[in-house]
Amino acid sequence: MTSLSTRLFRTRSTALAAGFVLVALSACNQKQQAAAPVPGPTPEVGIVTVREQPIPYVRDLPGRVAPLRIAEVRSRVSGLVIKRTFEQGSLVKEGDLLYKIDPAPFEVDLQSAEAALARTEAAQVLAGQQADRLEQLLSRQTASQAQYDSAYAGLKQAQAEVAGAKATRDRAKLNLSWTDVRAPISGRIGRALLTEGTLVDQGGTSNLATIQQLDPIYVDITQSVGELNKLRRDLASGELSRLSADTANVHLIMDDGALYGSAGKLLFSDVTADPSTGQVTLRVLFPNPHDELFPGMYVRARIKQGIDTDALAVPQQAIQRTSDGKAEVWVVREDDTVMLQPVEVGPVVDTQWIIRSGLKAGDRVVVEGVQKIAAGQQVKSVEMKVAVADTGPKPRDTDTPEPEMEEKPGTPNPAVPNPDASKPVSSKPPSSKPVSQVR
Image (tube, rainbow, N blue to C red; front, side, top):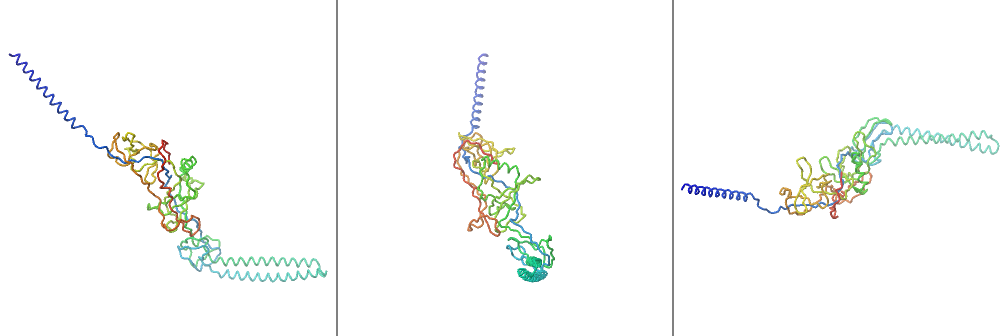
């Protein structure tokens, strides 16, 4: 009886333990089913296909405005300033009367010189008559050769005295004309540095006024020797293409950040580097019809020095940054999964980052939707159209035809922006050519 009870107890305990095990397994399966992710829709992202395209080599450099021509108005004779005839700050033309110096002393000098000339001319007439008379007597052998030679020498001396008197008279006339101080060049005259009643000295250092020609006008910008040599090497090797010689390839950024309304043309670079800064000066010619540029102004010049014909670029929003500041982009692979690709970026041109390394032509880069993707995730890509921004300034007066930029005083010369800065993307097929460096 005891053995039977024992066997029943063991059987019942085994059945109870098996039930607990089944309950535990059932609970674990329910938890695993609850933790399993529910498959969702494939995220859609906007992409751009990287292609080779012509992109200008652009640099922002500091510069100073300088006048095209500058002249200091000085007196060439001594005297008292009796009149000022110009309005300060106005435009003057070459030859305009600016100051009047008291002409009375010079008029007296001219009259004295004319009287001396008349006296020498009378002496010349007398010497000529004496020489003619002795020549006739010599032919009749009634005068000696010595008498004739003396009379002929007296005639030549009288002629020389007449020539000297004429030169003295001409000098007196010239000094009298210099009492009218005239503008040596055309341009805008500054403030009057001397007033009526001032005594000026001949050849002195007194500056009566300053005239500056401001249209067109120069802007002298500076660039380091290293950058300039690198640019020349890239141009020589074909890495960059040269711009046309008549291209208006420089734009000005004013102190308030606004773009100056007319483009300028690079004339030349200096042949001497500044020993203290290691920089060379580049001179640019700008039209200045509205007198917005003043000599001495500080400006920044955006200069286009060449074109990289096969550069790679992506929109700015495609660049991501790691915690240590390195650049990377999301790339859609051939199986439509995404991965992070480290890249080396160059400068920003328009709204795009120049890619120096890390991408090749044909890569698909994610531009929109990066917040909803993860590495290795399947995505649905939609090609986006990237609009290239035109950062060039617009001409002020679109009704005025574009004139030639010549160094002529007083001629407005507004230039239209160079369209090279907004060239469309090249239609060449993608290739595996490594990215070209643009520095």
